[in-house]
Length: 421
Image (cartoon, rainbow, N blue to C red):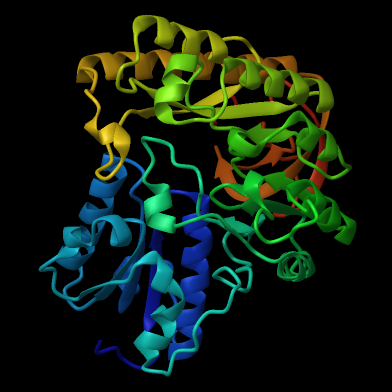
């Protein structure tokens, strides 16, 4: 690469929060080793890093379109493509001048390679070994795990990110202390399958609950969990997580409410286990907000299967959904299954989204007149600062509240941000 002095670096993320976390770490390393500078706009960049997503065909296509757009708009820019598409479909970028493709497993080499420095191989720790403190202006993020050892029939993530690995507890605690010292009052734990934390690393049963307890002992912040896969989640685990400082917000990607569909998906639980987890969450964490992922129109999903999923998400226990129309991923078992008609997939997706919208609103209405603690964020709505309660309700901040502050509010019709997701 032919990069100027004081190289201007811009990072763009597609996909999950884990990607965003890694993008910030990569940009930070590149800027440091090149003695460059971070810029907030691609227009002002000499080097653009694009961290791609391959979880659906749409996200993969958007990743490719994003890179093409940067090349067309900025003829002098160099582009680095990394992330999941760089692993599962690097050919998407074949023939593109000024593009360097680096797969996930080589992310840790990017900064050294660009700077022309001798690379020091990554050790047994997960990348990055430091927690970037500017992923958000108000909330700290902390990667504790990567990869997935489940082999769900539809999912390309294990191919893109490899087997489940955990960040050693000592390093996680060190990173959390630095985030707290930087002034963050909320930390979100992120990874691909954080419920699997510690497996294969610790033989004494040390897992996610034990890590959470140690993190909260540091003090000075509340703790929010990222998406928690139900494969390794048990009622016993949830009981151990009932700790002061834990946010009452759980996102559990059940994917379906039908035993038949779950079996075809390769999920190692059924409708009964889903109901058990939902009951436990509601009992253990009064006022909890529960979100879930749902796949609409999985191959072989009958009308009865769909209705079973619909009844699960309409039960009042799940308060919002991330809806994913089924998208076949090359190399997965489900890609070889006979798909449903596109119109049926679209129709079922819309039904789920309608339920999600209604459930979200009903949950917020049930919380009116309750006292909550919100984290004031840097985003605004109608010229006013907003933030999130620990149970995931967006609220207008009181007058004079500062970014990153935890403040007490009583929820009302006037301060709840009803239209915000």
